[in-house]
Amino acid sequence: MSTIPETPQWSALTARVWTTTVEPESVTCGLVAGEDHALLIDTGSTPDQGRALAMSAARMLGRRVDRVVVTHHHSDHSGGLPGISAAEVWMHEAALAHCPDLHVDHPVSLMAYVDLGGLGAEVIHPGPAHTDGDLIVIVRDENITFVGDLVETAGEPQSDDTTNVRGWPRAIDSVITGTDGAGLYVPGHGHPIDATAVMAQRAQLAERIPMDIPLTPVGHIPPQLS
Image (cartoon, rainbow, N blue to C red; front, side, top):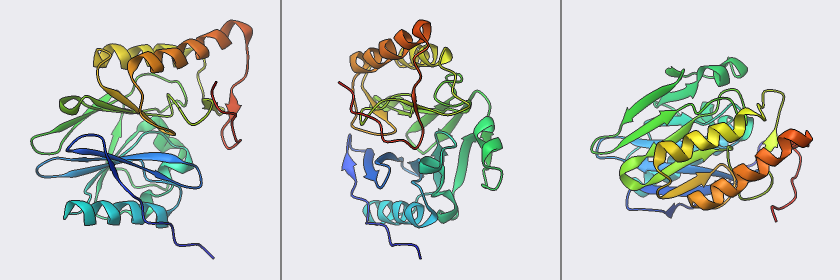
């Protein structure tokens, strides 16, 4: 029997951008509100959790969530999608190949633009890294970038059989270059950080390559970053 998820509590990063954390995977989900549309970034682990995210956002905004970006295929980010109705969905085409049962309106190859009305969200594939289908979401007017699990502040970065360890540092470089290192970067797990902290994690990842040090497999409880 499924349990009813707790009502998500949204915290404002700016006047038009919020985040919340949903359990049990401590996933950071985002919400961006334009004049015409509201965008949810990642959906939690279960349909009930996705529904709770959309409903809590709608109560706060006074209108429904009608745009969704899923940053990658892992179930703690994509599993809530079936619980969100009447929303247009963006997901990378490689990620969708791992989740063929999900309904996605806009499979992304390299990039897409989501017009929210007076505010836009740039959806970009920075290259294979944490998975083969990672997406980031740049809300340039608010200086906020959602980076999915390219970066984590709640523990070590994790991997699966689609992870490209050599490509991962390059993907982070692409993120920082594409945003001029400005503003806040919201990880898929943990609190927002600045470009200096992002590059520190990039350096940790790059150090593993010549030594062939494995990353923590997805689904394992990682140790805290030092």
